[in-house]
Image (cartoon, rainbow, N blue to C red; front, top):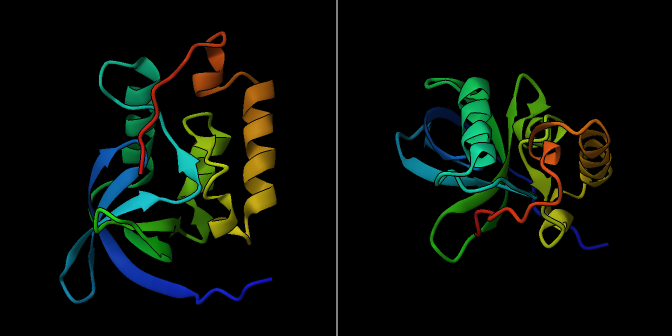
Length: 145
């Protein structure tokens, strides 16, 4: 198993860009865009499930919410990819549990500590037909990295 450097960032939520992208300000006052790691949420452009994902994220992370971010990778567009925690709970996982996001299997290895939890949460949301799982086999357009 490859050892990954654990980078934790303390930050404050500035805003929500979409169902899996947030804007935060770190303790140095620098604003950064964070893509929530290991998940994908539908795009908000007209898709009800995309709008629901964005609303859920706004509910979980109102402005000025203090967060801890476990940085997983630096994306090519200059944004960071990370798992966001509030009160010791993974917001990424909460979105999957509520059916507002799916597990991104391509980047799941970056969430090695929570990998099984993500997969179980997705299966439970699908079985309970929560959020985007309410729709019968519709092709949803997801936000890309």
